[in-house]
Length: 531
Ligand code: SGN
Ligand code: CA
Image (cartoon, rainbow, N blue to C red; front, side, top):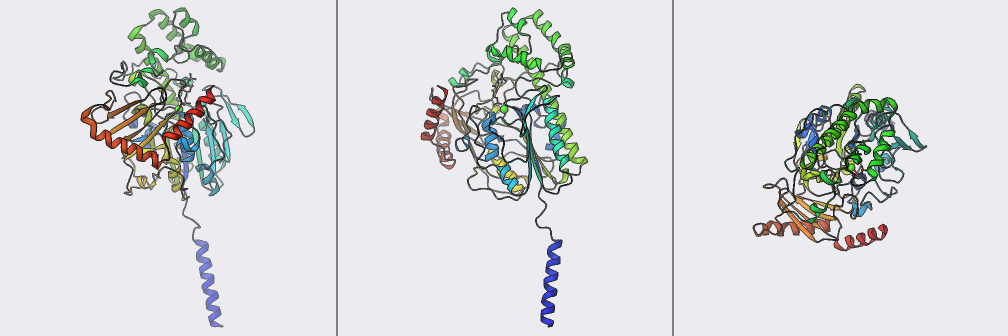
């Protein structure tokens, strides 16, 4: 009897113990903030010469700044598909902005959802298919609009009044607020349209950079000497391919009367359509700023190098003003986390879908494996886990983000994901890390005419192969030539590192299951599609 009694007692003690013990350690919430085309050169945490971004910088100050964060394919839809799947473009099936994402495949939001996370997505999506893996979503159709945009929702398209960056943040905060009584962890993707082309600033930032001359990059007048044909033939030069109307906000009638017609005539119409989205009050505030710019332009009619300089300044004034709204809204979101008591247990990630040229090499846009577009900003705050103010210089990629979020949530990483979780880096553990990155770009023929290429980047060197209608190799010594002005592929002095890079490239293609045959197959498929 005593024996049974003591057994019962033991069982009760065990039960009681189990009741008190949490079923699992507290899982962090995750806020993933991603901008569109936000260059690291335009974030003050990265020592920008162009503007201050105090709120974005807060994430770096209170967390970790990654100085060597890159993408696998520097263009919007593919980057988003890589982030969702943790797989390179040739495996997740979304290689360019034209294709439709197969949203029936495995993604990290789905895995988090299955593990009990509440998930949501607000803002830019650009994957065409219906978002899956989210309890709640409201996304911009295609590129979306800056003023009074439409949103696709599970219940159809709705129009919202306001400025897109504010609205996307409102939705994110609104959703977080609706979860307050719930004790399930959450993951929300807050995807801004800004600062994507056509760079339309919000009403409260219209004049932020108006009278402030911005420093020009050293390579604004690049002649592409010592580079291959890909750089020479790309159509993304501020001089020749940036539109005076849609991009620089010169009224089509003024541009036409001065004989400065757009590189692509539909830019003029796009400008009108964007302008017409504004309310009368918004238009009046807009005109008060842009009419004098138009009048000055008409009076001074800059040409030659002066016109390039003028276009660069105009471009930067609008681009940076769009970022000011992003920064302000990142501040709103961080303040909300603070006030609601969520900050302590929330992992905050800030990144962009890729980098961007801010006049370097005379360009805007992205796509190339050259540093400005290959690199992307990456700032992470994880209270109690990541040492405030830390800086990391390891080679990391957007391919690693799905794995990172899964591991932080205690969810196992599927074997077919191809990146590496950044959790050990974030928590200060020392782990063996990769010594090279793989890159691929497919959208050619296509807008901006950047040729198909792939390549490898190590700590010091970069090797790129441009293919399809050319067969050219480029190699750069990033230590002696950080601006990538001098292709050393055929330089006998670099024979040894070149050989090593070629070998590394082969190894990475095997590791990531990419191959010459697959590229050929993809090429044939894409060309057929374009006919
Ligand atoms: C639009 C832009 C391009 C840009 C692509 C892709 N032209 O077509 O300049 O490269 O989007 O951008 S625009 O005049 O319509 O703005 S991405 O970020 O979605 O990949
Ligand atoms: Ca983009």
